[in-house]
Length: 239
Ligand SMILES: [Zn+2]
Image (tube, rainbow, N blue to C red):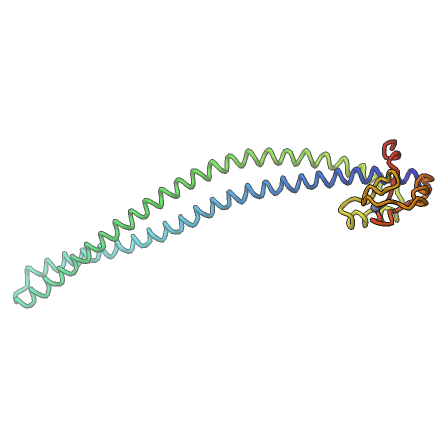
């Protein structure tokens, strides 16, 4: 059992290290995700503005077409005007021309307005694209750094995981199951030291009889308060 206790202590040490590394890795992955979200955000701003621009340009094309039609109408009406014989008809066509001219002026104003809006939007898009490019370059560097750190972490974790497997195989399966369950229930800490009559996991006093049993070291003792597996602190130091 003494050997088992040393192995359990080592297993706990490795698992806490792995927990820490895993936590670090998660934080780094979150960092990458945050960087990617930034890029996606900038991209969606550009996409929305580009869509707005496409709508504006389509509207301008329609206005251009209307203007062309009106201009044709005016040309045709003005040609007709020369052949008109009656005063009444002349007045009617003149009125038509007047209305059409007023309409073309309005159309021209609207076209100018749309063009100005489109130009402004194009400027905004160009600015956003420049920002995005800078952001992407920045992020590529940062991401590369984080990925390197993750790779280093992973290779360290591979070694620890292998060492852990060796210990797990050497321990009785029932002990490993108990250890695993305790880790789940006790925030990752299943094995704790006992020192000066107390459990260092929960800081409660241990019954003297139990503490004495620990010194004999021939069975697996758990804390009656927090249920964690106990090892004597001097064994931790020697182990
Ligand atoms: Zn305890």
